[in-house]
Image (cartoon, rainbow, N blue to C red):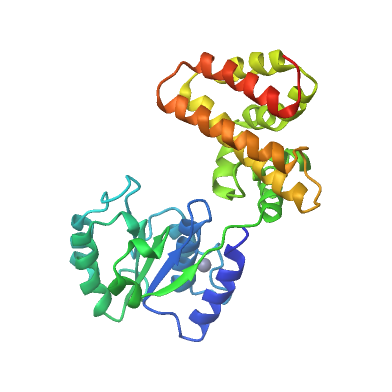
Amino acid sequence: MPGIKELRKTLSAALREGLLSHAVLIEGEKGTGRKELAVWLAKAILCRSENSPCENCSVCRKIENGNHPDVEIYGAAGGARSFHIESIREIKNSLWLAPNESEQRVYILLNVENMTAEAQNALLKSLEEPPAHARFILTCDNRRSLLDTIISRSTVYTLEPPTREECSAALREKFPELSEKEAQLFAIAYGGNFGAAASGVSDGRGDMILLAAKTPDILKKGESYTLAAELSALCKTRADLSEYLERLLNITGRCGIDRAAGKNTPVRVTPIEAVKTSEIIERAKEAVLQNCSVELIGSWLCMELSGVFGGNL
Ligand SMILES: [Zn+2]
């Protein structure tokens, strides 16, 4: 996956030269592959093959399957302060014990931005004076949400989000059934976030993306009734409608910007149309928050967007 490749090279080199810090912090937005990179690094640390990680030996496979006795994964995806001190206490229970099968113990701590301050402080003690056999791999979305003292005891590696081109190429690699245009649309609709776009493909959100992508064209032909019908078929709930709005916002926004820069875009949207669309979407989102009916917002939306794209009612 893009973004990860370069970091893998950097981390491999650090490991080879014996320069890898005992605490590595992988920073990156959701969907950039933080966990994937953390697990890969655990393999790279423990795999004994020449081309470590080989992804083939029993060490690599055990780590991949989450049952290597010297690799422990902690983390909480429940939002802020859902990562409690109990997990750190558990780590402390095994930290000083000799590793079971390998030469080192690897602790992977995911989403450390969700740690309570209490948990971060407790972790700090382990990061300060760890036993020689211990390695910590932390992931977070943004280092600013962590205590300075945690950051200063770790080496931070930042995962850059992939470009849209990298994202759509990676999507086609993972989902060969996607056409180039579909992959592009998914990449745009999810703002270039590979993880989110890939879930969108797996969850069958293609119809939603296609509807958002063809919205400007439908309206330019003056067929707002077609849009209204397709919207009410696809968007049964407020969550559906919110998703449609989000995809439409990304697609028109991105294509408007690219068009302003003279680039080819899969959807024809002028910068002015993009700005007007974003204003309408903001108002529609407010209406969703205020619990207006999905049908009502849908018809209001068709009417307002018709005004932007020049169709007749
Ligand atoms: Zn291996």
